[in-house]
Image (cartoon, rainbow, N blue to C red; front, side):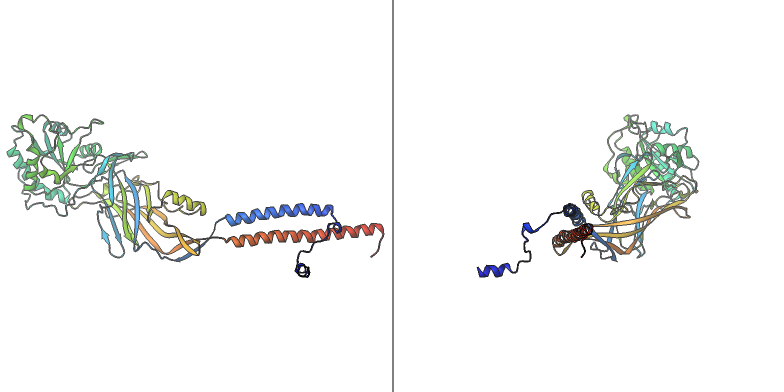
Length: 504
């Protein structure tokens, strides 16, 4: 009994008998207000506890992805043939990679940017094309000069028609000329057009027969001339000389639009190589069937030097490249080690379907992070969907340049006293311009990475802090309400005493 009384003496919450308490209307009103205040403040505190709190800081880039950065892109060039389209990379450290093909895919596209067939394969790269030692002595020519009025006639007359599309000002055309004429003379002697009639070598001067070149290069897209229309603007686009095309009678017409189909020759240009290739084309064709095209392919000996020509005038280039994390350039242009290009007619207008830096972020991951940080990812693919068209109002030899400043953004969360990386992405700003140049027009993406990175850290709230705040809300509201009730109660008592005329 004594121990129980001692224990009761430490009771901080001693009870007042109910008979000694007095209820009041003001106290009831304050109790209701206090209860509502508690509920409101508790809801606010719970919402604050459930809301993700982040802090943003700028630190020196400590990337974990090494010294290289991946660039993904999907670009459409309505006026650049896949045959000559080249993807190059350079940087301030002296890196210079030309015509990257390993991680790049090309698709021929029409003027509506729609693919016209399967992937375009460039085939093995010939680092050196032999032109032979023949010298142009101005002797009689062996090849037939074709004009606009007789081109169709010859394509339908001979089972094999091999045409050299050239320009007199072109260095490579002049290198080819003596070998071509000598090879044409040999083939003419071995396969007389009047008696044998299985093959004929011809040529077209595109500086004189501009309409012919434009007509066939638009429909067939086999050399360099394209007439592309975007937004009502048309361009004549000569790309590369010389180009040797192989037409096959009967199999040179498509069913859809009646356009000519054909192959391109990419082999050596000396007389012996040309003659050997032509003989390989003729061998499967019997003399009695010279009026009918043979549908099967020629001998394998010629397969490595010829490939189907691009089926449309434009090219979609997609894929990725890995570059060093230093200022550099990604460039797309027409390039060939054995062709010349008329820079005044080149048009590098393009549409950017996708352009981004760093590893691809899964859409699900990005959407989850955006729920936490709404502004993240807005500049991850800033150029997507934009078009850069040269309407020729600034003249010829136009380079389209994009200046990109890249900043890495990293989002991390702290859970269980450890940091966990949620996402790592690269965002960039883009400024573009069209300017004339004395060099070959290109589409250039100049990128420069910032040495700093943005670090966004998720700061989780502890449950103990939440409970402490809830207790503070309940205790604080209860105490303040009690003080107000006491003030109101004493005030009313004083007012009643004054009314009864009592003095204190």
